[in-house]
Every structure is written in C-alpha cells, then in structure tokens.
Amino acid sequence: MTLRLMLVAPVTTAALRGARFPVDEPPDAAGLRAARAAAGALPRVDRAVCAPAERCRGTALALGLRVTGEDAPADWDMGRWRGRSLAEVSAAEPDAVARWLADPSAAPHGGESLTALRTRVGAWLDGLPAAPGRLLAVVDPAVVRAALVHALALPPQTFWRLDIAPLALTELTTRTPPHWNFHCGARLQAPGDAPPGQDG
Image (tube, rainbow, N blue to C red; front, side, top):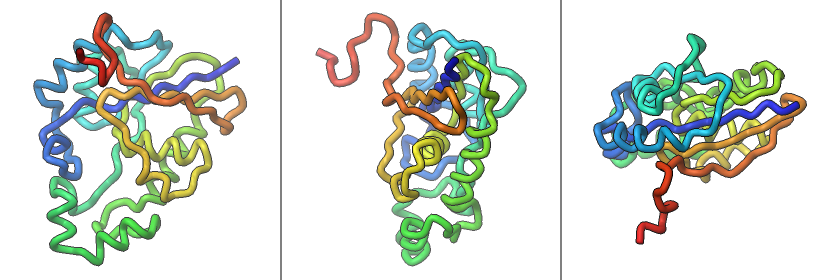
C-alpha cells in the first residue's frame, strides 16, 4: 500500500510580495481569496497537518482543512536576514551572501544552514508512519524544496533550482520509506478555472 504525501505551499504575504526573507505574518487578502477559491480543488485527504507559521495556518483555514495538533516542519530560519530583501542583504553583506549561496553548510545570517534545513525536513519525512493513506501538509516553499532534495537524494545545490509557487501542490509517494517517488506539482485552482497560462 502507498503513503501519499501532498505538500501545499501557503498563499502570498506582504513579505513574499516584496521579495523579502519571510517573517511570521498572516496571508494577505488576495492570497486568502485565492485559497478559498481553490478549496474545492483539493484532493481527498485522510489527515492534514500544518507548519506553525501564521501564513501556513491561515492558508489551511482558508482551504477548509481540519489540521491535527501535530506540526509539520517550520520554515527555514533565516536569522537576522528575516524581513530583508536579498538585494538589501547583498548590498550590505556581499561576501556573506556569496558564501551562503555557495556553501550548503554556511549560515552567516545566524540562523539555519541549508544542510541543517535539509536534515531537519528529511528527518520529518523519513519519520512519517508507513501506513497507507493520504497526508496533506501546508508548509513553506523552502520546506517543500528541502523535502524534494532529500527524498530524491539530489545534490544540495539543486535546492536553488526549484521554484515553488503559492498554492502549488507537490506530491511524494512511497511504499517502502525512505524511498520516495515524486509527482510534479500542480497549482490548485477552483473548478471551472482555466489552467495557469490559459486565461483567454
């Protein structure tokens, strides 16, 4: 039997719209409208969990999910860079940013390195019960990317090449953990909506 894990990225927030490193803030109004509209497109699930961030909780609520008390992995801890844009940090700390982008073990911001993020998310992924069923988790894009890198044993630098859009659904399946298969993500959309890129 198959465990089907569905990872859904939260909707937009003010920080995300401003291309800033995330802070713990609620979804914006446009994001909540998008989540409510997409609620009917969610696949059937047996259980739902959610990351502790307010944006993830708000997204899960807008999608109409009943989440358990268990937390899914929290977002990447960006330390003192939280709330700042990459452009701002690059101008102020160019050497630190270059080291962060080149070395997965570097954490010049004082938060969590990419290696630490992958290890933490991978431990959660591999620790999921092997019982068959459908588990949905609302988690931040960095967590989805780290899960894919871990599950598929990809090189760490692949993390930077993965783009996860708001409300994107990414699916991993397994019959024998920790061996996972990946199904390419699809954006959730309300019934009757045109697929992305086909707005008429």
